[in-house]
Image (cartoon, rainbow, N blue to C red; front, side):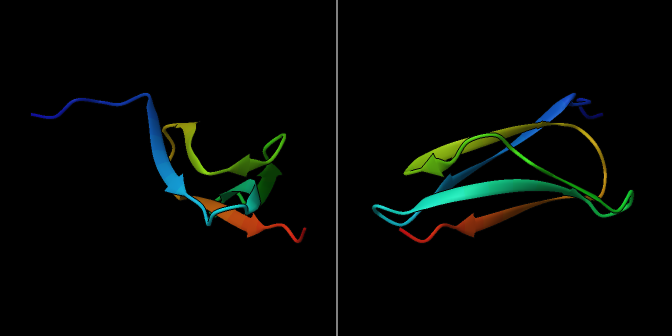
Length: 62
């Protein structure tokens, strides 16, 4: 018996001083959505539960 989760999350720890933009890619639906803002240091991304999802982190140039 398992527990059904309505959300999933992933924690990241970026390089010191680096900033990242994050996109959510639905590999089944072939869509990509960039999350608002930028992320740095240790951060967590919370997303609704859905199969075939991918996170794309892009390190921004300073």
